[in-house]
Length: 80
Ligand SMILES: [Zn+2]
Image 1 (cartoon, rainbow, N blue to C red):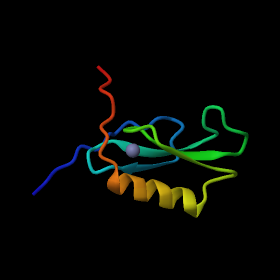
Image 2 (image 1 turned 45 degrees about the vertical axis):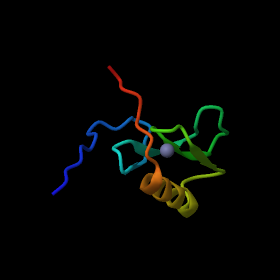
Image 3 (image 1 turned 60 degrees about the vertical axis):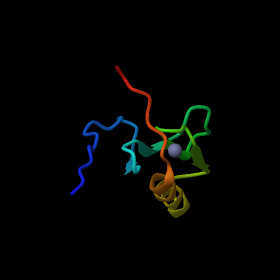
Image 4 (image 1 turned 135 degrees about the vertical axis):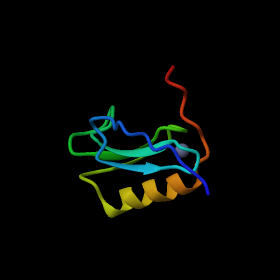
């Protein structure tokens, strides 16, 4: 049996969160840094890859986040 540690505290901006196979997260956030009003993005907290969608949260955005979380093996930088 395997166990995974799921971060319990979400960033306030995260609307959806996908867990990668190594414990990082892919967060869907509104108006990413440098983005335009209304834009949303999926951002991997492990490798910093991102995918931006023009307006709102689309099926494509969730699909990218799901797909990336299934394959990314980058670990998030330690916070301490
Ligand atoms: Zn990644």
